[in-house]
Amino acid sequence: MAALRSFSARADIEAILAARDAERIDVPVLQPAEPFLDTAGEELRRRIFLTQGQNGRAMCLRPEFTIPVCLQHIESKEASGRYGYVGTAFRQRDVGASEFLQAGIEDIGNADTNAADARSLADALACVSDLGIKPEQCDVLIGDQAVFDQVLAALGLPSGWRLRLAHAFGHDATLEATLERLAQPITMPQLPDPILQAVKEEDTAKLEELISTAMDEASLTNAGGRSASEIAKRLQAKFVQSQLVPEEAKLDILRKFLSISVPLDQSVDVLRAFEKDNMIDLAPAIAVFEERNKSCIAAGLDLGSITYNASFGRRLDYYTGLVYELRSLSGDVLVGGGRYDRLLPLLGAAKATPGVGFSIWLDRIVEASA
Amino acid sequence: MITLGLPSKGRLKENAIEYLSAIGLNVLPPADPRSYRAKIEGRDDIEIAYLSASEIAREVAAGNVEAGVTGEDLVRENIPDSYNAMKLLAKLGFGGADVIVAVPDSWFDVHSMADLGEVAAGFRALHGRRLRIATKYWQLTQQFFSNQHGIQLYRIIESLGATEGAPAAGQADIIVDITSTGSTLRANALRVLDDGVILASEACLFAGKASAENPIIIELAQKLSERR
Image (tube, rainbow over all chains, first blue to last red; front, side, top):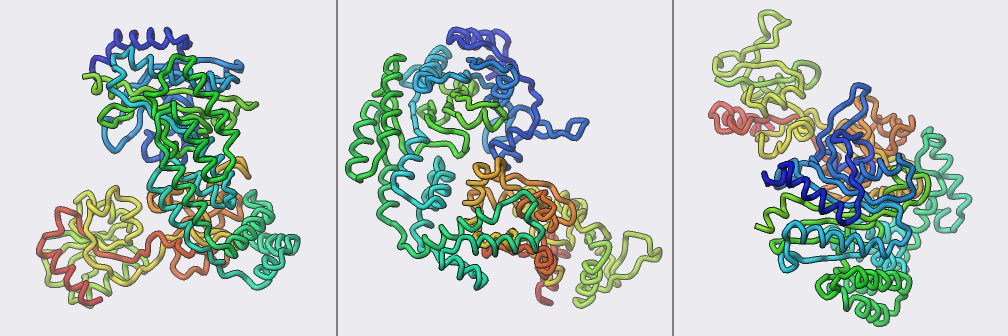
């Protein structure tokens, strides 16, 4: 690891990134904390190194690079860019040092998303190969957030269920717990009689009026939070669900989907078979998947050596499609990457801006290649 | 010789002294009433240090005083890894209050943490921002939401007082706060979720890890437990 911190080793990495046609980008070590907490959630707070600027603004040592690179891209007002970075990131982890060297490429604003996905994956593989990792020293795993979303939509699950499942996607234990909970029948909570009456009579106007009155009494009407119609809608949906038997069959189909794990060159056939067996329509997601596979072949990737795992995802709501990891044979993540089309708008980009990128854990590369 | 930290003011102080006297330990008022040190009648091996309740948690954890009486909420919130760093020797049955998750009463569709998780997951799509929680209990909130209920999509808004007013003031959507009777919650049209009790707190005798085996503290813990 010490060797990587030397100037010459960094220069090597810079050369490797430049060879992938990525423009060198430097981001400040000290970053405003707000964008990280806002995108990743409060869980990140105990992991980042927080401090306060003189004006009281919360600042932190950069816990990763994607967000600072995106912010800098937005500021540049460029339509697109391919950025290569190398530097120290700071995050407290359960195991391992709290500061670590990372390098990566973020490809922002490229509208040909399939080609950009394939290129990102190919770049990641090429970089680790240049850093001395042989193909047989790592496994490549991909997942796809969009396919999962499409399965949820195609199953016609209630919107509340879909929200919960989508939020749990990417964490097997949470997802399983959610599935188990959804298999339980829903009971309606204790409600004031007029409210329950309005729900039962499907009298939306009356229901909203009653909720509005309650909000008025609590001075919540102009507090900028949830609206009466939002609450009414969810309450009505909940009532409809409570009248239904839990849809175990649908949850079983979902479990079957999540257990799919195949080499990428068989993935489209397997997904089509799954679609047919369970009589659901996944055509749009599979079409994108197939196109991307073609782009991957065009980018020189060997699909047979990449595993598609249907349950692989990230619990961050700005990832939208492809997610991937390169793992050492002992299971350490060497590279994490993915498509984050929701991130740039969240960070303040004026218009929809797609993005895909990866980050290499350089200290783990040193261990894995040893 | 040990030092026992007691709350320096209020009902917590009175209750603690009353409790000690019930097990035969009479706290003698200090010669100078402004002093923060006191003795126990006939027990030269115990010294009393009056400290603020949150200081007691910190000082016991740091080993500066061997044991102390304070609210469990303060220990769990302020002491990292408190279940290992400190030992809860006796629950004293006073100073009871719950750390709870409360939502506006008019959220008729939200009664459980699962409901709240669903609302939190869809919040940004509807409102362009995360669900906000007003609280002074950062640690307890994070543990409860993230670890126990797998809810990550929210922001904490620090609130050091009058937390119950935060939703009406538009500062936050829901709150995590301490309540004993629930009357302030009701007055502010807030309702505790069915599974929204994060911690049922009360005054407890805590010892530092290094002091838990001290015979004087063991004796104290035994007597206090029996009294209850």
